Length: 431
Image 1 (tube, helix red, strand yellow):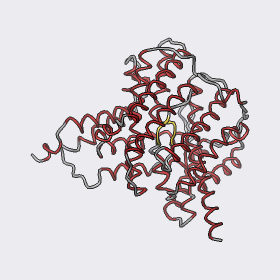
Image 2 (cartoon, rainbow, N blue to C red):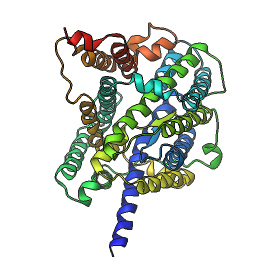
Image 3 (tube, rainbow, N blue to C red):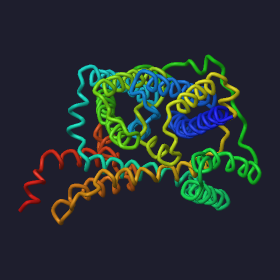
Image 4 (tube, rainbow, N blue to C red):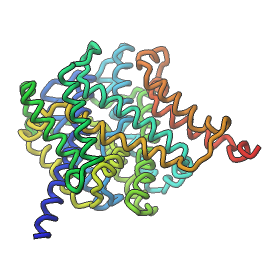
C-alpha cells in the first residue's frame, strides 16, 4: 500500500517537473521565431526540437553529468542576447539570414570554449571570481529579469502595452492560489502546488476565454531541420558577442550549484563541475546547429525545488523523459503548446520568488556600511536601470558591445566581479 502510494507520488512529481520544464521552454521558440521571421511550421518544428533537446540535456546531466535534479535549460542571457542581435541586424541593414547564420557560428564557437572550461577545470577560476556578493547580485538581477517577463505574460500585456483585465484577474487568482498552497498547504497540496495551479488555470482559461488558435503540426523533417535562422555566416562582431555570452553564461552553472549545495545538503566535487561544463558546451554547440537558444543549469530550478520540497532525482528523470516524448510526438507537442502562456507565467511567478531568498542567503550575516554597500548596491541598481531601459536606446552603440551593454544582467555581473576582485573591501572596512 505504502509502496503504491510512493510510486504515485513519484509519477505526480514527474508530471510536475514536466510542467516546469515545459513552461520554461515553450515561450522561447515563439519569441525567437518571431524575431527571425520564421513561418508557423518552422516555429512549431523549433518548439518540438527544443522539447527534445531540453529533455535530453536534463536527462544526461542527471545521469552522468552533475547528477542533480536541476533543469538544463535555454538561458535568459542567451535568449536576451539573441533577440537583441536580431533587432540590431535588422536596423543596421543586414539580412536576417546573415545575422542568424553568424549567431549560429558564434554559439558553436562559444560552446567549444565552454567544453574547454570543463576539460581543463577552469571552473575553479570562476569559483574564485563568483564571491557571495557576486552571487547575490546575479540572483537579484536574474529574479528581476524573469519576474518582469512573467509579470508581463500573466497580465496579458499586448503589443500596444495594455493590460488585458480578465486575463490579469485570472492570473492574480492563480498567484494567490499557488501561494496559499505553498505557504499554508500541507503534504501533497504544498508539494504539488505548481501542478495544481497549472491544471486549475488551464481549465479556467479554457472555460472563460475558449481554446487557443489553430494548431500547426510539424512533421519530422521540420523537427530535424538545421540552421533555420540562416546558413553559417561570419560577422566578426556577432561571433565575438556569442563567445562573450557563452563565457558569461557559465555564471548560471556556478550560481545554480552554489545555491543547490545547502538546499540538497551536498558538496559539488571537481568532477561534477567538469562533466557539467563539458555537457553544457556540447548542448551549446548543438544549439548553434539546430537553431535553438543555448543551455546551462537553470538557477530557477532552485526556486522550484524550494517551492515543492521534492528533492529526489527520480521525478526529475521522469519529467525529462516525458518532455522528450512530448517533442517526438508532434501532435502532443502541438496540443501542449496551446497551454495559455499567462497561466504558465502566473504559476512560475510564484516559484521564482524563491530566487530572491537565495540571493539574500548569500549575504546573510554580512555587515554593510556606507562604504561597503557599494559592493552590492552599485552593480544591482545599475543592472536594474539597464533592464528598465528599452533596448533600442542603445542603438548608437555598434558591434558586439551593444549586445553586452544593453543587457542589465551581464553588466551587473561584470560590475560585481570587478568591484569584488579589484577593491580591497576588507581593508577599507577596517578603517
